[in-house]
Image (cartoon, rainbow, N blue to C red; front, side):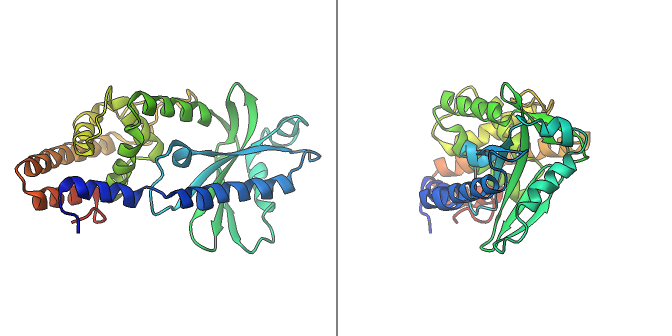
Length: 290
């Protein structure tokens, strides 16, 4: 049982942050496995040669949380032999299903195509979403749209932008986002991960190492940053999936969390750590130490 509120936050951060072993064996190991499998299926002699496999999403940004459910990777294919133009330009589903067939016969994986990605399930639990893309140029790629066509994406430009914001904020942004993801999971999971990360990166001009204050300030200010653009400059407004009513409910939940966080901070300042931890447990979910 955690004693002070500060100790509870330290324990909570440790519990939700992946270990070095998990970073190497699960995240790194699964990425390496995807690269090996696809490299064997699509060698340099193929009409569809694999260039490389790279991490994307929360695993690349350092915002992934435990328990690890999914790992996102980008499988980059070359158009050096004109496969995109000649075979797949008007049929991204055929491209996806060709990637899926590379896993036919594998007993360690259950594979399905998800419109924009191929999802590989592992016997030990969890999955990897493989987003296969063709190189367009200047950090931009063709990604299946989910409806048979293509969209443009620049995931590594977006990753670099987030890394720059994390650096500018003295590396306090990524840990704060990990906690915000637990709040999101505990409260209806209304916000998509990429959107939440980008909101947080826009919300702060500075962040202290005090996670309690950082969370309260995010909830106080974050509602004015729901409308943010893709930092990779390809996907437009990241809040397009939300209705007006959805946004009002999210703003209401921000206000409620901000008020509760203020009460928790006041309780901690007065020495009532049990009350402070009770309030933070409501905000951050049942895995927060009591």
